[in-house]
Amino acid sequence: MGRAFEYRKASKMKRWGTMSKLFPKLGKIITMAAKEGSSDPDMNSKLRTAILNAKAENMPKDNIDAAIKRASAKDTASMLEVNFEGKVPHGVLLFIECATDNNTRTVANVKNILTKNGGELLTNGSLEFMFTRKAVFEFLLQDGMNIEELELELIDGGLEEIEEEDGVVLVTADYTSFGKMNEVLEKLGIEITKANLERIANTPITISDKAQEDIDKIIERLEDDEDVQKVFSNL
Image (cartoon, rainbow, N blue to C red; front, side, top):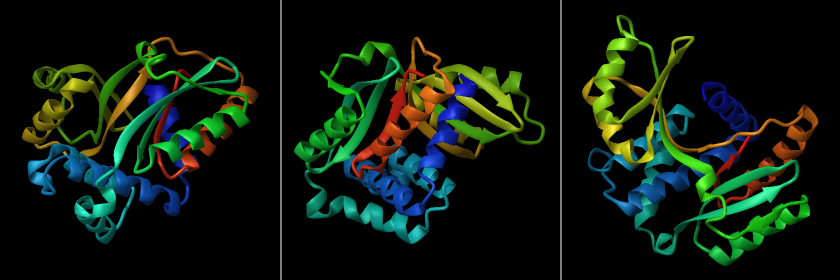
């Protein structure tokens, strides 16, 4: 699970190499979080996490503040979170999360990218059972921190797995425990560096390096679309 997470992280950062792509996507996540709840991060854990992730990618404070203010703008009233599911070459399945103010446009764009690259858009719900949603938190190992003791303290937060590698701790819980785990970590005084809801393939597959290049290109084209937020695969 740790290697898979690191692969997705490295692969995403490679594709989101320019801030011109990354900041608008992070901003949209912040806007959606503020739109769903309070614009005050102290009162909205989802917004607090979105801001945390944006800061981790060095998004300027002005951009973050602008994204929060955008939540009350008229043009965001119709903003929706929508998901799409697709099948692409080499037996790879994709779960695509989007945020859009025009679902017709987003459907057409996603479908076009998939079909032009030998894939197809599937009926929503086709792949739901093939992925499990997980809450994933990342933070640095602090001086004097004992992983075994920490594991016991995080059980109340819904802990399923804890890993440590090269001073980085990765905590995994069921997605329904996202808020609870976030609160437990904050109460323990742990400074979270990143937190996300991930979709983990229940039966991951392995493909050749050449096939991987093909899939990376398709995912890159999807993530280039302004409405696409995250792309998960069964790799």
